[in-house]
Image 1: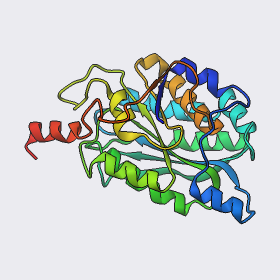
Image 2 (image 1 turned 180 degrees about the vertical axis):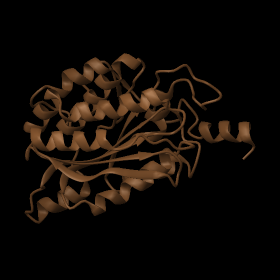
Image 3 (image 1 turned 120 degrees about the vertical axis):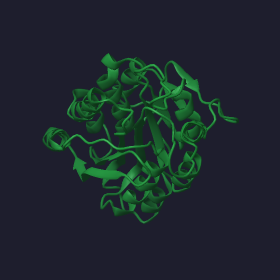
Image 4 (image 1 turned 45 degrees about the vertical axis):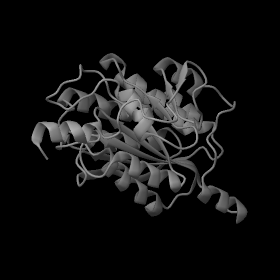
Length: 278
């Protein structure tokens, strides 16, 4: 089941101790249990951040600050503390075209305020960069092998992917998504909808529907939409809290379409072809 959640609801659920809604363990975690080898972290989290040219410089700065501030926030650290191991493994990369991905933070373990501060500092030190095109499929395909390179084993494997437009480069997003889901990976989405859709930037209406129906998936997968620039950082914090806590939204949720997508999953590719003829 996939969900869309409001920022306020995410914060309410994310800061609750205990309760239902945890995502099911993935295959690798189940195998670790059979071998009596406990996981070393609660979640392996890949943060995949859109830096395509459709994101203006202010959005890029706020997005980066949002992730850095979320990781050191009281809500995040409390969710971390409440986990079985009180540890998460995180890697952070930026993406645009299908062949343009750059790791900003290699795998790091966050187990408290000091390690959280160190990761946040690394995020903020990296030079701001931008790239052409938008390949969500390329980001997913880049993210999946990172789990195999991670020396830490977790109860869950999650890709946290943000973006302000549909896939318009590389393979269709649904194919990349399905390969990740087959490996037991959960994909959550952070659609950025703070600007009016524009033909010049290849934006679409209802990007949250597109993310729900075409991008996210896995047990408890959800979307937190950003529709107000002033709530950009708050939304990022809410999403990370839910992911670390291993919970799904419980309030003000809207089930995603289970059959035909409400937005065509290749709408971005069609828009690009209509505009550029290729």
